Length: 285
Image (cartoon, rainbow, N blue to C red; front, side, top):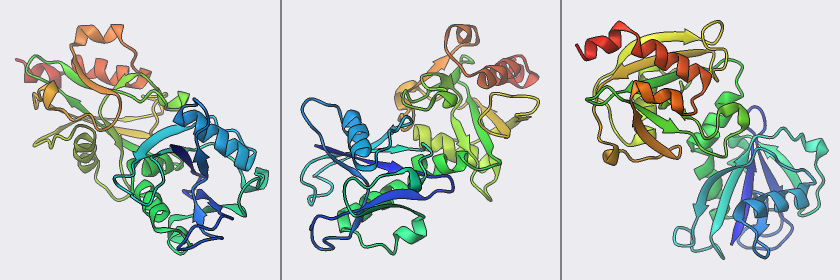
């Protein structure tokens, strides 16, 4: 079993290692994500951190899990591969080349021109097409717009998502928050709300209404976005029908249950405003 790491630089370039071992068809000089095999009883995460430190001399603090790539998917692999990513700022000039021929950051359009073995290219392309990569790059942008969804059931409870445990501290790990995410460049905020909800739950909503547009300054100082579009609806989705595609869990909470759970300050403000609003009361008149 092995682990590899995609380190994302500001601007979206990804660190790759130029290999010095001869594995056809590309052989010596091909590019691949840094990583290696596990040793002893270490976990895949421990393997990723150790291998990256051994190969580059840099220690990562913001490592996150992406996926397990199995031999069933890619028969060319000698064992299953755990894929991680991070956004620690590690300039190339601060890295050693302790293994391989070189380390360099490459933008996606440059990666397409590099010599890579087919399985490495497929794994790289899979990561570059993921929300994990796009979201990390988007959060590095100077201006960010977001969209969130207040989805209610027939009893007026709100659906919340338990955020991943391995998120960086400033992104509220292990806290409950609204489904939603970043608005892509050129995307309408309502389209982002529908898209993000489907990506996170597997449910296609038929209707949403705009509740309010918040701004980080002065409304939501702890928000991860500069502007946050909040939509609402009462689709009454059964919890067992939700496919938890992002985060650790999805669960409904009544308004009087919110005080007892960990919620980011900005999400708590949005929920308090909404439950006190005519928009909420009109749904349950």
